[in-house]
View 1: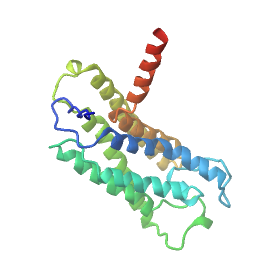
View 2 (view 1 turned 60 degrees about the horizontal axis):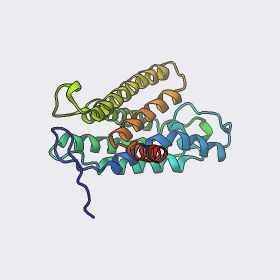
View 3 (view 1 turned 90 degrees about the vertical axis):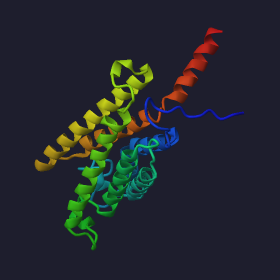
Length: 234
């Protein structure tokens, strides 16, 4: 049985990153906030109330969910660094590498601890600045993927593109806008010393949805739905 070739996106080179690659990146982001809250609640940290949301996603580095926090970000970094995008589109690979390096910086330079008693002996204030820079670069990269690279096409006019392509482009567009608004929200909250867990989570989920959409994660569900519908109508 011959394997079906991947069709190139309208006007772009051969897709060197298979759907599964993009889906893995998306699923990692989708599950990250959920797993952090779940594990931190099941493995409470002295001084922190179990199941109470921390001020930021990054603060979970100092909880019982540290393994998931580091593991997911390192895995995400690996997938981003190996992301090849489309043949002839060097920007895909460059942005993937920038995002991959930034993803490494987030856990390697952890944010400030939620409690002074949880401060490691090796932590220094400059790590907070490096952490914020890494996180900002990472989210800016995700925004560029969603608003720009994922929506590229040889067909200039949006209305002339295939229906499925228009749907994916629209979802990615709104994901990019959601990430921008979430970053602004998080920035204002940081200035006001308010929690940023919610805007960070929204941004992470929006990034995940854009990658899952680009990876066409919905196709298996659509095939199943068609099969079920076909079976019912027979």
